Image (cartoon, rainbow, N blue to C red; front, side, top):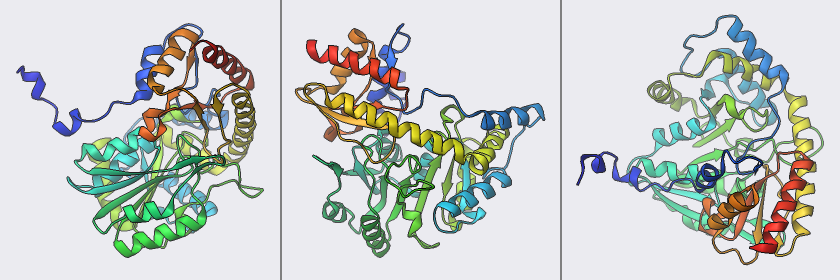
Length: 392
């Protein structure tokens, strides 16, 4: 045995690599390839936000900041959350280098080897694999797919939330399915977790990308609408989706105040702090970015409807319009190996989509398509998929 074979811990070696990245890495750099495999728009960050970042750099803000974030950004986020949900204090907000980092920090804060974690799937693979790095055991509860889309069997979830469960992870609106948890189910789950002392980790990255809300500010139902200040609830959010800031890598965690000193330590030992110029851009996003969010959601809804109609016109394809997020998660009859299918789409038809199996075994036979793109690009992609279905 060579010395290098023993370097990584068994838990790390056992992690499943992202199958989304496996397809993308094989296809990136191909001239003429249309890529819809990642969850990001084809439009750049709004000028208002970019200009704030530029102004910060020009002012010389290139130094370390507070572990928990600039006070101005923490206050702005707290006010933003309070407008959308129940009142939130600045002391409940920790700024992180992306929501992905926030999820990892929360898991580091709560989980020990052997802890039981429950996740509602299909689900973004980073969430399912993250607890395993810490030696936790992940139990999944799968959504069901039917004529109306994806739905949760609430009793199955409650049965899985046993007294020895440490953490429940729910992403709603969901990546990849777009499923959004109804308020009534959230109330039941919150009460159940209160009684058993189970933490809830809500991945709220797509809460603003919601197409079934009341007129005005669109926001999906969230646990923070219902929770009391002392509930074991953590909400992780991001600037990436709502404000089209994927490359800025900025997010936040909303948590009970008692956790903040420990989260501050973990931020110090992981990344120290988020860059000042990125945080200044974040302030502009949450204080003046509502028109940009509204415009983006409106464009997404149009793109969603266009793509779903185009997919359902193809043979062997079943697609249901999702109520939230930015993905069509559609079934292709006869596809039993979605990873191989997507690799062939990329190599033979210059079409980059994500395999459903990347989001769990229940996603096999499905394909994820990010519809945060222009109708021209979507139409070109539909035509390429049609040619592929004729040949494959």
